[in-house]
Image (cartoon, rainbow, N blue to C red; front, side, top):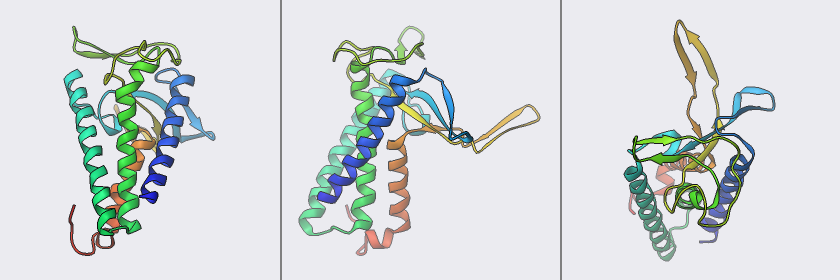
Length: 208
């Protein structure tokens, strides 16, 4: 369990520190190159949905995503306890799963609490059924008096790698256009590592 805790805490610290810095220092939509390189930028967007800016309905979809993340995190916690109990402690299994676990928690924190601790943010207009952006730079506020309510916060994204950014005629081609965060990266890398080392992670076959 120590390895799981170390990976989880490390990912969460990097994830939340980077999100809070961007949220309190950048205007929404602001984008700057990293080390003068246009192919790696810090671009501040707020995401009411899933990883890489994918959305899932309106406010009801947001509630569903928060609940789904809670269920997944709870399930993974008990899976970890089971694995530790039966001696399944391979790094090929625990480290990737801990990365997925930490990434899910990181984005859950945003969705559950950011609306309660920051004074401004992207909100859902129930009249128009659209998410409404905001101006200015957000600051911390008294807990519970933020721009929204419990489970209505938006995930902060900032990592942007537009390695190809050109026009073909009138068509704008950008790759990779999605903006994401450390939590998304942790989940993605964890999944990739599991696939790469599948046989070592599950030497006796897949069994959760």
